[in-house]
Image (tube, rainbow, N blue to C red; front, side, top):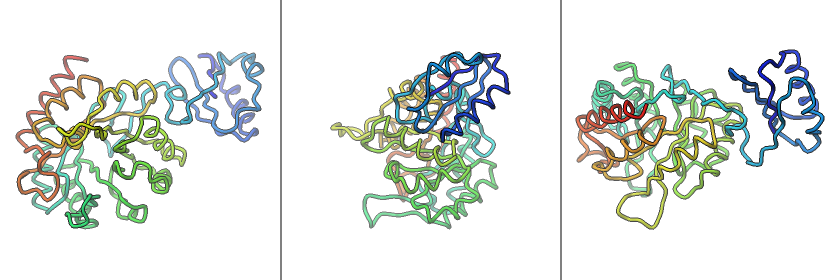
Length: 333
């Protein structure tokens, strides 16, 4: 349920209502905008007399919410959320490009790529330290050493870093990581999501291979219900009957999610297509349909990459994509 207060609502009345709802065992999500204040009520609201609340002087309207996700719901929070990613703001019209290799392989590699993508316009550096792989024989990442190397690249470039977590037990290793990524395979690892809800770092949550948008939002709700509201949603393609691409990129999710939630939505064209030559057109399409950012794989030697070289751009290719994406955004703004 949400209670919409009038623009001239008094702080005294807001505090009285908050105390009243808290006494009923409800949690309050308060969103104060320029034109109105919205009180989102989370919990068992069946005992609330809507008509009685609606008659109060400072109340404009009372509405029941049917969707099972509350904190991620735009009805509770009409304004776009802006997430601070280590000093870089994402969402609410602030578009960012996250770029870097699928896997951190060496200090020389990650620093070289970091410098190249920063020069081309990337504002955050991605790199896998822990790698979930289909085959147990494939390269699994450098783990703690990979995070150390990412931090060295951050020192060299100033770029905030984004890397994936696989297990809640690894959280101490992520103390200096700016954005923690939850991969598609862990989107419904609810115990991990609960632990991430207890930290105050931004969480980049990827949509699962075969999950609906409501399921994605419910996973975001797990994190937000724990107290961490710094969630970024990421579409990385879903599994369909099509085999020409690695996955099927669902760009329609961008306007749909923007309607349903206040959380920023970014696109991963690299994992979505699995083919480097398709990354540019999909990046341009993502920018055109209103995505809040991109996360793109870039490697200085894709042919010899230890992971996902086929979908990785060279630094030169990335520079071209980044420039064209900004041109598209200039046209639609």
